[in-house]
Length: 336
Image (cartoon, rainbow, N blue to C red):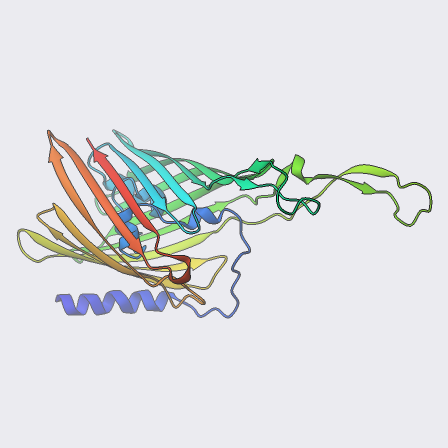
């Protein structure tokens, strides 16, 4: 089967996975920061990465990919996201005789904001912060020479001022190297877990027992109860095909089909050109066919340097998000 027919097969299979959906559930889940992708390489490739991930970024895209790492590694990831919001991610991968282990901490944060009330709409002089954090532990193992499995556990917290919500979740993933040379298949389920509900002293208030009484009002302490929200569950199915162009260069083409619980289905497509395993050029398109999507295209590059048996990989990505701006990300991976 030549390259032309392999590519046709890849995209037809991805298209067949999608089912039309008439109702969008945008904004119906908590923990939205869990949907922000990790790793400049993956972002530059449009998020088409569930069948590609084979390093620390597999902690996010597909935990089964951790099993394909050949060295211990540390990843530092920073993104200037939209509206002065920043996302930082620190992850590590450890090789062991019984499988590969991974751990990560992710933090979404923003600057201080003024506390305002109905009596002080210009501000009370107080400040508050809002943000989200996630802690993760992962395990991955090769079950055969072609098939691997991975699992992650997560602790999630979202906080605004003096109130917070917490949750627990797991990720599951598989990775399969097909008998077609260069063709890999990946599947993952992310953020399957508990519901999240805000609680804290900001939700304590005083209310009148019976406002209709003519006597002096009687106030009692009350607790405002918020709704419970699901986590953003995402099912990914991906295919990736890598082709050697020469003894110095190769090209990688990947596509992911996504089925989230809070939006319509979509497709991510990306490609990467590698030269001497030193210079990497990437581009991609994210959220194809997703209703009201504002993400257009992405691109990026990477440089890998080996010094004294230690690999240093610096990746950069740029995403066009229309009216929300153009988030940029820098990732440093050290493998030793």
